[in-house]
Image: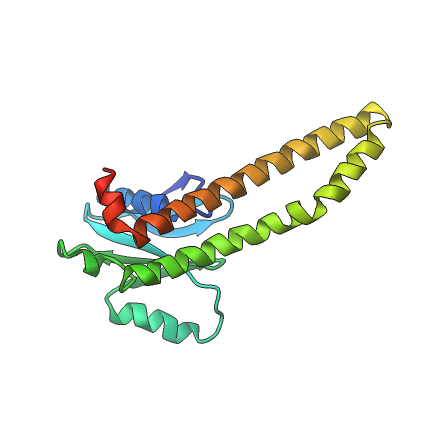
Length: 190
């Protein structure tokens, strides 16, 4: 069977974009097979069909078999697990929106997004806790030679990039929660 590999990056808050990407590939005749870090998607040639792809964030390790059975009972095909993300797909048969979602209601979806957001916030804790130590260390090394200064500059740039990614993801997830919690507000703004 013919396969293709594509490299794409989706951040923690980009799961909706990742779902759309997988759906578009399937429409073009490439069904999703697997994902490998850091950003490698493998697809297999298939018929051009409309499939719905959904990702679910689940940190609970207990009774994975029962968890997957719930999805199977609702017609979802389990594809794979990557870290705490589970990948599912289902053939698009109707225009019924509730049949296209893995969540029974907006509250369930909001709960999942909040879990993702808290995971992202946990990444911020070391930045906040170690910031005074970091600033003190920078002041200490500013009087050292140029190599230390260059290392600190690179380190600072990496930390600023990671911190900005975390903040961006939290803002994006919070907006998604707000739009799900207040669907009429979101509809009126369009």
